[in-house]
Length: 159
Image (cartoon, rainbow, N blue to C red):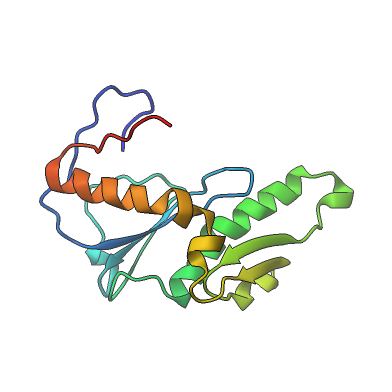
């Protein structure tokens, strides 16, 4: 991470072999929401020291570094619900009470309490219904793995 427009960004943590889960979300309008990073550990001592993540990012941990219902509720509370509430506040008064829709591969009753309708993605349909799995996640994972292993970025041809 570095200032936008920086010509060279140093890679820290090349010797850090911890596995993490990166959760990305995007709106239908194409706005990339702040991510969630899930580290493996039992206490917040497992989180990296000296890293200044952007304040809007949701940094957490689980024993396995995998996403679970608790981390999804945390992400909903810290990122999704505040984003939707900000959008609602920006709408004219007559439209500010509109329902929102989210697509998840896990069902969250928690969202319904905030007038957000979760659309459940059935098993074996993630690749057809979740736009980030189709467009961003795979290349992001490959590039991150390559970068942290070799210290260089993958180059993708222009489309």
